[in-house]
Length: 264
Image (tube, rainbow, N blue to C red; front, side):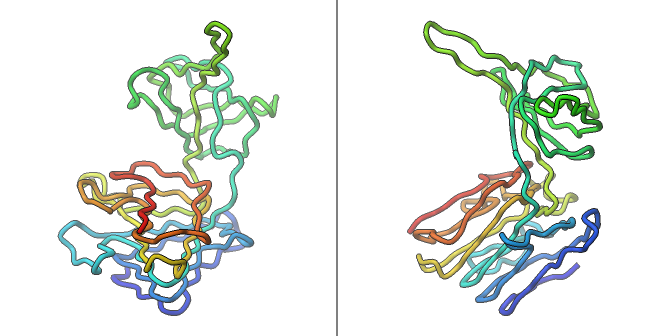
């Protein structure tokens, strides 16, 4: 594990030809100051598997303003671009009953066996959403794939269209894909118990002197609870943002807000 990485040139993570190859990178701090960190690009996404793990605790020294257990970006470029997934989320075709181990989706997906999904709650308790791993996929009808799950569902997840007067309301549980081939996370040993995960903190002088392009990347064990500004992804006092974006991301097990754009 590396302690502090200061990027004033270029730090490039190159993928392997084998898409199943997995690489791990561990550090306490990564600070990009006028340099570039590249994990794939929009034109050439990172095609194998990479897990970047940030380590640290609340009592560890801070990079002034940027904090700890973080990627800090100032006057530079951060590209984190995983393989595009379509769609990143959909809805149920039919209601999934409690104790079921299968769900039917409403549209074709590129999801694979071994990947993790989340099924939204459809009652009055948001915490009744559920996470499961796909163990099999029946694509006999490719537009209505049937997923087999690794565990029985604990709750009922509703999926139907209801009519109220002249209005029809489509009320279906959302199903989202959590897995991405590029993952950014806090260390599993301390992040959850301390509610103190990894963050990406970006700050400029209110201009486009920094660029962050984040796409199809998984963020987990992120955000730092009870700390103002310590969100999973934070554009801090950055002003108008014309060249940066976040799309197709999976953010789960976060201990603060997911993404914040804090203007001047």
